[in-house]
Structure formats: structure tokens, C-alpha cells
Image (cartoon, rainbow, N blue to C red):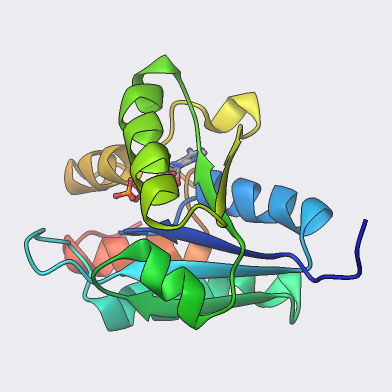
Length: 166
Ligand code: ADP
């Protein structure tokens, strides 16, 4: 191994961040020197939370991980954001076979655009394999507020968004 630092960029909507995302970040810390959670500011998508809210929730959720985890916004091409932040690895989480086809397409496109940046797929703990931001929003929007899906600060924001009480 060379002494080169491995910086991983973990892109996503994180609308909102879930325990599944945090499980992936924790795994990254075992493998890489730095992990950058990169929040996609996609103007075509209609996220529930603004980029600022998503960043605040992520920042709050990663405080216990220490200084090797950072969070940023990005817009446009992921490989450009990766270059800007000197990342040499892209991380994506794979939950089930259904994630694979889209992720493979994206990984191969990113390789075309930036052959020097490697995509690494990580698998979360089995207990998070059913978990997605979309499902979390669905559950909370129906008035259910389970504690096992998202950090407490995120649950509080969801409760506020949907005018619920716990
Ligand atoms: P995107 O819109 O890019 O899919 P997400 O925030 O939904 O953004 O997901 C970001 C990344 O995290 C993706 O690689 C996704 O597969 C992964 N991911 C999402 N939920 C989980 C989970 N429960 N366990 C592991 N990986 C996950």
C-alpha cells in the first residue's frame, strides 16, 4: 500500500438521513481515511426537506463519528464533486438486488467519466435492508413515529413536518 489517503464520497438525497445511511458511513470509517457525505441538491426532484435541513440533520447525525466524516452539498456531476474534494472512491449502498441495476449503470457511467475514481458498494446490516428515506416518509406521513428508523433529531423534524405528536 502507498501512503496515499483514501477519501470516500458518499452521495445521496438523504431526504432524510436514516440509520441505513449511518450504517454505511460507519462501515466506510473502517475502510477509508475520510468519508464525505454529499447531499445532492437536485432541482428536478421534490424533496421533503430543503438542502439546508438535510445538511443540518446529517451534520447532527455524524457528530459522534468524529472529524473523519464531513458533509457537503453537491449539484451536477458527482465525479466533479469528487474531484473538487480529492475523493478517490465513490460509495453506494446496496440493499437488495433491486438496487443493483441502477447502481451498476451509474458506476459504469462514472467510470467512463472518471476512470481513476473507483465505485465501492457496501451492504448494510440486514436489519436496515428494508429501510429507505421514501418508506420513512410514508410511515411518518401516516402518523406512525417508530424510533428504530432514524435518529431522534430526524424523527422530531418529521413529526414537525407532518404536524404530528408523539
Ligand atoms: P439516492 O437518491 O441517491 O438513492 P438516497 O439518500 O436514497 O439517495 O441513498 C443514498 C445511498 O444510500 C444510495 O446508495 C442508497 O442505495 C443507499 N441507501 C439508502 N438507504 C440505505 C439503507 N437502508 N441501507 C444501505 N444503503 C442505503
